[in-house]
Length: 108
Image 1 (tube, rainbow, N blue to C red):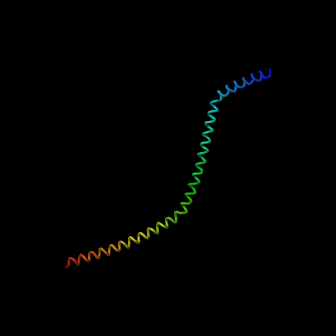
Image 2: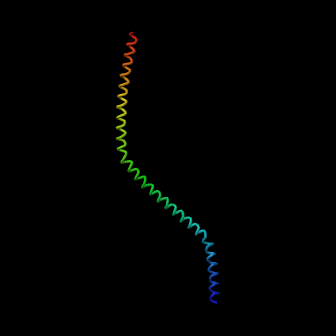
Image 3: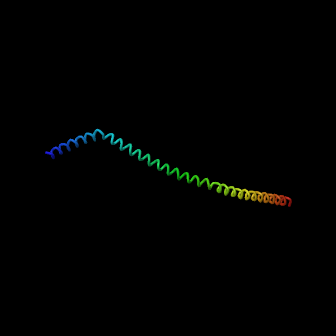
């Protein structure tokens, strides 16, 4: 008798559980979808924080190195300008020599 009552109670409980699952199924699916979206947003936020720290570190390294790079480039520009000036002077001397030689040739 107790077993039969327990079985009957179990059947009623299973039937109610089934009805409850049908009734609340949409809410359960919606809650699972929202939980998944929240977890994904959290992961994206964590990745964004990591990227921000990496790029901040990179920016600080770049700022420290920019002064030496500018100084190096300015020295290179000076060397190139001096070379250009020397080459221009040499060109002028050669043109002067050429013109002088052409004048001599015409005079002969």
